[in-house]
Amino acid sequence: MQLSDFDFDLPQELIATRPVSPRSSARLLLAQNGQIEDRYVRDLVDILRPGDRLVLNDTKVIPARLFGMRARENVQSGTGEAKIEVTLLEPTASGTWRALIKPLRKVNEGEVITFTPDFQARLVAKFDGQAEIAFNLAGQEFDDALDAAGAMPLPPYIASKRAADDADKSDYQTVFAQNRGSVAAPTASLHFDAPLLASLAAKGICFTKVTLHVGAGTFLPVKVDDITTHKMHAEIGEVSDLAAHEILQTKQNGGRVIPVGTTALRLIETAARDSGTITQWSGATDIFIYPGFKFNVADGLMTNFHLPKSTLVMLVSALMGAQSIKKIYKHAVENEYRFFSYGDSSLLIPDG
Image: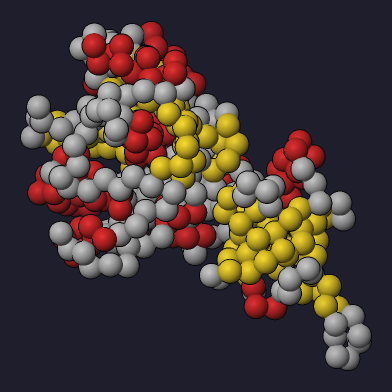
């Protein structure tokens, strides 16, 4: 399979830079039984059956983009400051953070970047275009300082069009976000609001929460022509014993297990990869799902519309079939669905 097999033309004007309001008023492309229907997310109440189970990723996005200053020597005045942009990637086992720094070349190891008078970071090391930094705060003090000083790490295709603002702190967070750790949102879940969740529960739709912390690697492009040689970035996640039991019970009762978002799907399929049956699981997953993959848990998928030639287009092609996805995406473009993180959604139910 070649990278070009997953390419398509996407007009730039279809890239959404703001979400619709209310969340559940986003459009929903329903693909099942070989047919495509144009619906709305709120129609999930009518589409799903009592006993179906939605699997939700309850990770919480941290405001991982920081702007600070570093002291520097100035040839003319003797002192001065330089603006530094820091984007957190993930914590390390030792309590430091991996991060991107702009401009990295001008910051030396041991130098301190100040974000607020009481919130600072020291550059510990540089490697492969990234940095390891150590903050002067930890625990709740760190969380509070980051919430106050940081901005939401919008995806590159949005950040290139506008800066993050206060609205993004709520817009780029799911209503059921609970466990801090992501630097990107599980965006299919952004379409759910409290009224929709209540309506689904009243219909008899079940919910299970799992946690996969989404890393910045989700935006990395595939750089190999032969996609089978692509190496996925690893992300930390957990499927609790309760979550595994609920999902297994639903399948035994004849209900459908439908993960909301590719992150939830990748996690539950990781948890079932060894035995073929979902069990409690925690750790780092680098599972790569492309055509030919055998799904053990997911009976469908709710997901947004993805970048051309991305691993996520490969994932939905594995679920629905490559030719079917080409038709679905052609329909989405022709009918002006909004793409990517703040865009519209789809519910994909494979045949059989």
